[in-house]
Length: 480
Ligand SMILES: Cc1cc2nc3c(=O)[nH]c(=O)nc-3n(C[C@H](O)[C@H](O)[C@H](O)COP(=O)(O)OP(=O)(O)OC[C@H]3O[C@@H](n4cnc5c(N)ncnc54)[C@H](O)[C@@H]3O)c2cc1C
Ligand code: SF4
Image 1 (tube, rainbow, N blue to C red):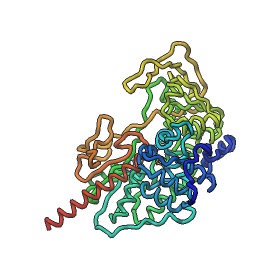
Image 2: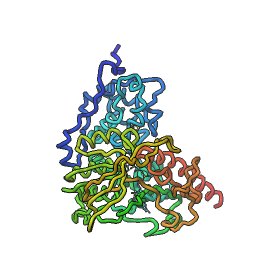
Image 3: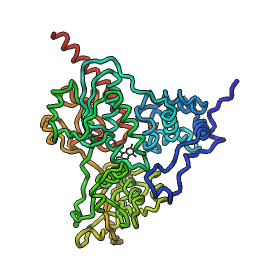
């Protein structure tokens, strides 16, 4: 009988793909680690304990069949591993790169609980589907028999694109409208190349385009057409517009030149990566080269900004965050990467004011301490009279999170129901808004969230849109 290749977590240590040296990483926007060699992938996959109730799958928003594709990888049956992984996800190689695995699948791996370090699930997932692309196993989308009904999708981020793919497979005509000149949403213009190289996103988009999905770039719903026009043109509409209104701070001096919102900064950098001419970058306004940079915030967007600034050749990069390391929202892995690359974290500190002559030159910083827990259970930061200080800055990047834009106003749709946070209110059983045949998913419903949740929403809403369109077609037949 063949020897079982699994359960090797005692004899084989956890090993992520090797990271490049920080000095080399700082020279380009390529991903910091390449993928596993085949033997290493099989070895790491073989550490899985194949537990009866796989908590990794339970805590993966897509409920990926993780232990099964780990076994297939360990057995060298890579094409089958790919087919299985592809069943539940439209972008496994993207999730493998950018999911915060320490909070999702890997953070709930049973062998981690027993002190043996989690299986490196995300890295194996990336390896499987990258190999599939290379080997030509990723086939064109098979379009179902034409149904004669169309769906308009507003927003070409991971939520909109996932829905577009599944609806096309089901035989619908699909149109995606996006205000940017490229599809992909934050995968394209938010997340930097050192976490997610752009050709990985572009090859997915090309596959969608090749299936007959019609992309309308540079089309902003609201500016170029009200929501009602799309409702008249399509049998159903999906809103997947994400959240883009930057949270601001009301601090003296905030209006000075040289203080910029995170997404403007990251978008300019990503555009440069595509080879675009970006005026605000060429002028230096959104370029950190030779500057003392201060980033304000402690989430993943702040981490992306500090690491982008390092790669642009900043003189110094500081990250100010009002809580401490243990209480920051950003991933600990990203903090470690940033520290290796030379970022200085100034914990328990918040901006008190900015000053400078024509543009920002200094940030006055309040020292903070952690007080009693707030409503969320986290200890609330409060001013620590022990000591304020000042740091020099030529460029300040604010990364304090995102809120929903005012869609009822922007879309010319005052009847569209939203929550008090401005996110779209949906019936959670159907993901439909209060407007008949208008559905909504992703960040614009959840608030700022994760790529994997947008994909999950896209998978779920496809079924609801399909049911609704089938009922509509049936009713039209009866009426005729
Ligand atoms: C800097 C940054 C880094 C991140 N890093 C990670 C990470 O490492 N891992 C992770 O899981 N998540 C990360 N996230 C979060 C993740 O990117 C989002 O949760 C996810 O992209 C949401 O998907 P979505 O489809 O709902 O919206 P989006 O990706 O935001 O896409 C929405 C699309 O709608 C378009 N749009 C908006 N309004 C209109 C309009 N009126 N008309 C036409 N088009 C419109 C936009 O142009 C955009 O293309 C990050 C977010 C940011 C900002
Ligand atoms: S999709 Fe994300 S959470 Fe699920 S297995 Fe992949 S990396 Fe883990």
